[in-house]
Length: 482
Image (cartoon, rainbow, N blue to C red):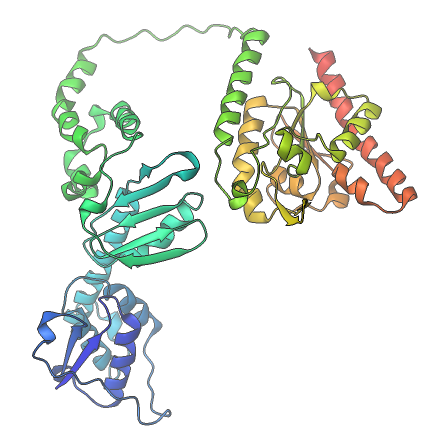
């Protein structure tokens, strides 16, 4: 009898290597027992590790579908899974098409295991609820989950992609997953006592859940099938589910009994006074500025002095988007106040644009640099950093609703257009962003400062002013329309 001991419950590589060796040695499934290191069942077992294949020429192939199926089914909690998989592997040598026989007991059993694992993975994706520990930059998010099967390592990459910008931990009795914003790590399981009980956001979530609950569309059986009761104890909204279900019938009856409302008569829409609209936009921009002040979506905030948000009139027709704050901007907390800002002010004046009438922001809101003694040398933002910061630009754009967005430099163009965009091939003409907003691509003022040749600098400066004159034309057209 061969007693094979695997390192842990999901040791697929160990099982695969041992199973291949056993098959090549001609060891029948009835002559093998499978154990996990540390299991009590192996206290009286004489462990014998299968030897390596005697010859490298000895080998065999199985369908790729089996490897995929086995790698998922082995995550099931059934202790017989290793033996069933080995029996299936043994039979595949003489029946290569066995996986196509859905009625075969081994195939049916392993397929059901894999399906159960995938379903448990889906439930983990759906029912993990993070709780906030600490505040702002010191915040970390922790969740507790009790999976049916050994799925933590399988499910964790989803959360790393979905919540890439926040540090989190998912605690389970079997295994814990941790994300620090860069790498995913695993640690042994813990008891539920180590998980946080609640946080400051849960009452907000419960109010939202109650507000969207529609009693007229409630189907208790379907709800219980999709969200089994065993998951309720770990959900913030769980305490509300039973009362909401209990009151659903009464609420539906009240809705039906209510008098039908007359349809609204067609009315001419009254435009909100411009002053009131401008005030509301200004408040929204201030709210965005406050939110962005604690942004940790990418690592740049760790070394930067502060977030440098956009500034300008809330009713601006033109939005200027630069790359990122420089040293001066990082210290002042305002965009374009350094040498590049002085170059921009000069060019705007020559193009006939008052700086105070345009909204100026950056594609990236934190200063990226490399320290060299007392000097901080500017570094170009990476694509991941541009993507992490793009939601702030999008929210500024949606709030202000300018007629024209001027993207100054490659980083700004990538943020505005959502892809890497060559400057020279795209400058000099307007690009449609949507039905109401256009984009104009040009160079960044700092590019002009870096040109060593005075003649080249003069030519490029004239081209830059020419581009800005297109923005001036949009401003003038908007002023005439008003």
